[in-house]
Amino acid sequence: MNAYDTHHPEPGPEHAPTRKGDPIDLAASVYEHGWGPGPAPLAAPVGAPAEAARPVVSGPVVPEGFLPRPIGPGPSAVREPWGADGPAVAAPVAGPVEGTGPVVRPPSVRETGPLTHVGRKAPTYPAEPTGIPAITGGDLFGALLPDTVVDGGRFGPVTVRAASVRGDGHRYAAECRQDTALVVRTGELLLVAVADGVGSQSHSHHGSHGIVRLLTRQVAQKAETLLAFLRSGAELDFASLMSRLVAVAAAELAQQAEGAGLSPKSYSTTLRALLVPADPAVPFRGFVSVGDGGLLRLRDGDWQNLEADGDGEEGALISTRTDCLPEAYEHARARLITDTLPGDLLVLCTDGLALPLLKESELRTWLGERWGREVPGLAEFLWQAQVRVRSYDDDRSVVCLWEAAP
Image (cartoon, rainbow, N blue to C red; front, side, top):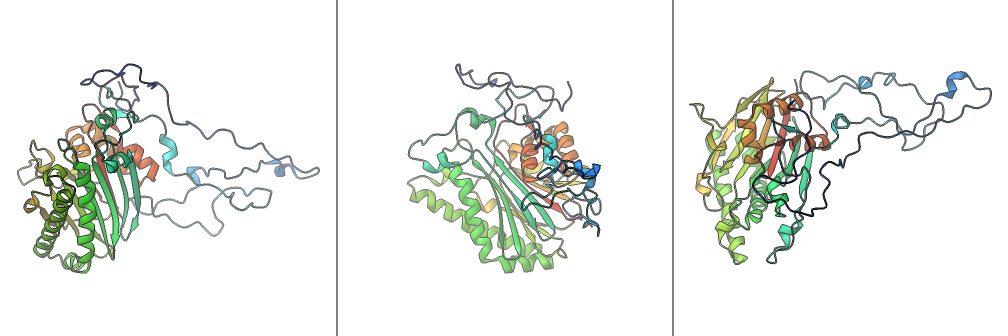
């Protein structure tokens, strides 16, 4: 079977009993596969030239061939401006109506439909959310966490896309998302982060969401100093300061847990973060991590594990026991990425995506073909980030940074 074929899942996960009576039609698609017919053509006035009988369509989709070509080999987020005569699209006969100009659709319209999967067999979980988390033990925060979040934007030399999605296992068990992803600007620095609450701890979602907020506050207070270290390439100074900021944020997280009458361990979470200067002349990127997850790079079609050690080991990606905040703050690892090139893609992710990316070559190929071609729109990025792989049912958080093409 082709790896890119869409398969409808079997009626229940392999390691959980099938729930009888679930009102879910697994064969039904919840997506629209077309835009539908447009408005009826307007009749031409009597005696008007024949070409005036062309239909006037409100908000026509501009064919992709009419878009200005991308500049350079990198992402197509930066395009040449229209020529003096504008795009080669025939003007409508009737005068323009406010708010009904041509609609340029992003590439996402080409890949609508049920979530796809890679691998010989489709996952047996339903492809869409099932159980909705309830307020349990007074934990309103967990019940209010959305199943999925998506974010993005442009900052200095990078274009950003981010998503955090509840895993198939948590969806089926009606448990909340324990992962989180963060995209925030503080002065002339961009901070992106992902955090993965430890599944064995019932309040780890408080830890994952709390640590990224607390780290943001610490980074904001030292943004100018951190930026100076990035400008000068002072790796030791950056690592020392960033490790202290993580330690302070971890201490505050422990205090929050104790204030709620819980042990700090119940907030256990991993953390990964990147700092990017707005100045395109500064090529250095700051990185800090605690626990498992991934930092990968896609360059010229090849995936690189930036956390592998010198012997080719997989580093923090694969671990049966991982360090967690707030307790293991002294194990924070901070350094600079000094070899960034225009056109690179940095992928910061929790192990819900890092593990299948490292282990499944079909997933690397599938995402590489899409993310290495151009920057997707938000909806398309979310669709791509959710590509399914059998046996990987954890929450998945990912932030992608596309470096501007030369």
